Amino acid sequence: MGKLNLNLGAIKAAASNEINKKESRVDNTPKPDNTILHEMSAGKLDPHRAKVEQYRYDVREQWHFTIPRIIKNEALEKAVELGIVNKKGQPNQKLFLYHCLRLAGVYIPDDDLLDARRVKKE
Image 1: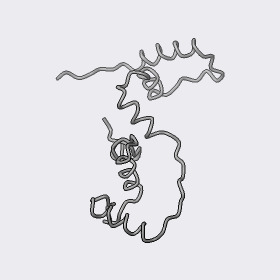
Image 2: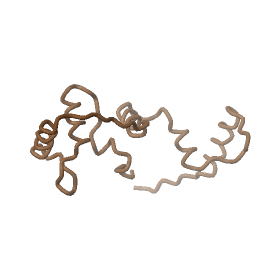
Image 3: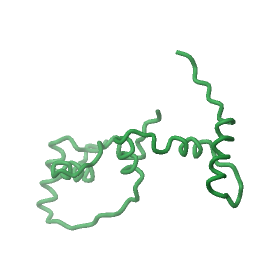
Image 4: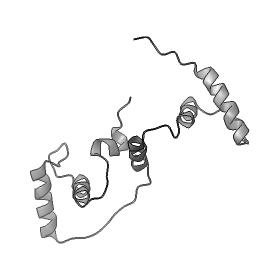
């Protein structure tokens, strides 16, 4: 296959002119290449990938609640039984909660797609 030759200088200049026409920038500094490419490709993702990115980069909130120890221990045993464990072999409580919510009908993307720390470079 042939190599893709992408001239970022020309794209950057054209996109920069379009963006500056739409919004007057006070500091008039050029945007980084990744920002320009992101703006150019905005709205062109497939629906599944767009939804996954929305979940991945959404604001995180803490969720605290207390439950009886017996229920917690049974849930952790079930997580180990299902293989929902971390690298140390301990049950992963968050992933088990996601598993239970998925069973209840809540749409949550796959675990490898959801965590922004585990994003695979394409």
